[in-house]
Every structure is written in C-alpha cells, then in structure tokens.
Length: 335
Image 1 (tube, rainbow, N blue to C red):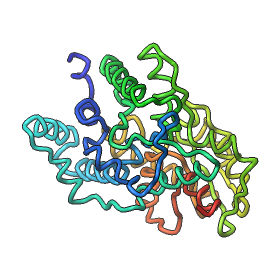
Image 2: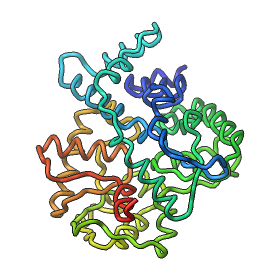
Image 3: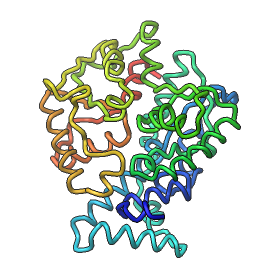
Image 4: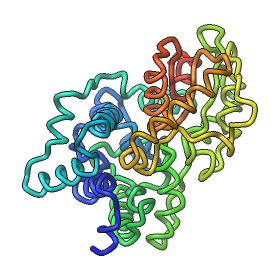
C-alpha cells in the first residue's frame, strides 16, 4: 500500500504484528494471557478487564527494545535490521520470536501490575471478566503511525469480537489502549455503546471507601504518562489516590508534571525508530524525577516503566524502584 511505504521499517514491523498476529509483539495469544492462569475471573463479560499488549508482553517488549538499542550502536543500522526481520517473516522465519524465547526473563514479576490491578478491583467489589486469548489488540498504533485505513478495518473486527462476547463496559489499564477503545474505536466503527474507563478512574471513584496504608514511610514521585495525562486527561486521579495512602509522601518536580510532564521517550513506536534519542529522553526524565529525593518512582504505563527503568540503568542508579500505581495501591491494601 502506498501509505505503508512511507512508514519507517521499525513501525512497519510492529504494524504487521498487529494486523497479522493481533498483538504488537507478534507473540502468541497464549503467551500474553498466561499471567492470568491462577486468577478466577467472572464468567460474565458485561464488564471486562482489558489487559492490553504493553503489560501482557512487557518482558518481550523490553527484550525487543534492548535488541534495537544494541543494533543501533552497531555498524548494522536499525532500519536495515527491521527490513530484514520483515523479509524473514514473509519467508516464514521469525528471528524476533526466537530471540524473545531465548532472552526473555518472564516470570510473575512482569505481570505484577496486571495481577495487582485485578486484586484491587476485587477488593472494591468489582469482579470483572477477562477475554484471555480472545482479547483483541486495540490496534491504536496503526492509527498513530498514519495507517488509518488499516486501523479502521482492525477496529471494526475488534468491536465485533467484543460485542460477540457480550461486553458492555471495559476497565483498561494501558493508557494508549484505553484512549483507543474510548475515543478512536467509536469514531472508526460509528458506534459508542461500550463504556470505557481507566483503572485509576475506577479506583479514584471509590477512594473514600478505602483504607490505604503503605507498609513503610516512603517518599515517592509520580511520572505522568503522555496518553494518560494529555489524551485521557487523568492527572488529578493518580494524585488523589497517592494522597489517600498513609505513609506515602508525594514529592514532585516543580513544574514538569501533569500536562507539562516531560516525556520519557517511549510510546507510539518512537523507541523503535529513534532508539538513541529515546534513551536520551529516558535518562533526562529519570534524572528529573530522582532529583526530587524520591525513593520510588510511580507511573501508570508499561512503556513508561520500561523507559524509566532503562534511564536509571543507564545512569547506574540501582537504589530507586519504578512501580506501577496498581502495585502501590495493592500493597497499601495488603492484597
């Protein structure tokens, strides 16, 4: 297609994963759903928990980005490597899949934001369904990189699958997925009959009934994910939640917060096209955040977690943790 020829190879690789394998990494759906194997979800899909690619394939995504950054520093360009990967896949040989299987660390730790979020929802009286291997990719990246025709086709397919499962309400946790499902998908399909809320909205709505106490006194700072703050407008909600947790002191940069928060350098496939610049932005943002004196950096996006951890690693800072907001709430609830 003409527009596809204008898309950088790194983004084409990710787009082909979505259209061909229904997830951004091109992994199996079984691989993505394995985090939920020990969780008893509701069999009623009126309200579902939408896990999204970013969290379900977090370690695979981290592995892929590490590989891209390594290649970017080698004599072989990232662009050439991505073109080669696309050609190999067409020939039936997926080198990326083999690399993931060999290098991915895996384990329950990667799924903690998802597991924590479900436990929190259950604690506040919401037992959602989960589509597991049948959860469709939101396809948002297709829209963001200009492949609007492909996005519309994917959105119609995703909507049909959601409706066939009886879905009436979605609680999302990945900011970009939530924005895509809430704003972009209805425009693409011409229907707006599925209610979509982000996890932090649901928690903030129930904050008055919760007793939250972190295990120890700690200074934390909060990084606003671009999609959560700028696209969904969810700036106050995470801070209200943190403000309601006993033993947590929120310290923030003077002005690079909320809608003016500095980007971590991830999102929209940017890190796959400009890995060096992405890494510089990750280091810059991590530096701003640790200058607050915080012991924990809290954010609410799988891409931001990956980027901030990468920035800290680049700076050789190993005494500061990066946690998802869902993990912090779960710890404060003792669930």
